Image 1 (cartoon, rainbow, N blue to C red):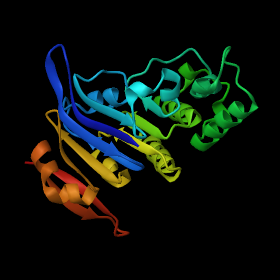
Image 2: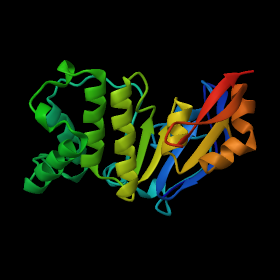
Image 3: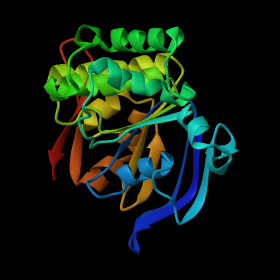
Image 4: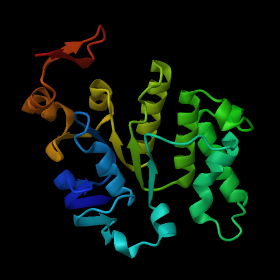
Length: 253
């Protein structure tokens, strides 16, 4: 469980988050909103990478200040939107997820190796174990980073636009992995760019606008509220495919 209470944060005196309160305990919460509304900053604050100006942060009922860096990394993992490509193999990268559990000199044991390998199997990257990360496509690398997070095995997972810039096959695989995290009982907070994907995978949608949360509810309830139309300047049309599954089309006003 993660709780953010009345968070205010910004950069060089410019406010970005204003009175943001969010609580998530299990399931997938997708954060959506226009560019520049504070979505990524919210995740950075939640990941303890940016200190808020005011507000409270709690993890599993405890203040963030109670956690050492290692203990925090055993409870919460974060996949940022922009990452450097490490000079490592796929297996080495996934094994990084076990670092919070290793003592000096960080030699993984049999259990750590088994967990890392299972994470690669679960994400479908085990056949690439010995390949350099730099030799992979963007979609393949993204699955490796998600395997690393599975190996880290934290109750809370933060993802910043995990499917953006990927082809449709890799996007669907990423969404499936998010669903698997939910089935494992994890709390997932994910910034999503594609509204239909967010509405499909989310248990709750957190809609942001100008640094504030303006809607936080089940996907259909957020659609029904009309806030998506107002915030994005669109009209939402409910559609159905041949199998009767609902999806939404967003038309510019």
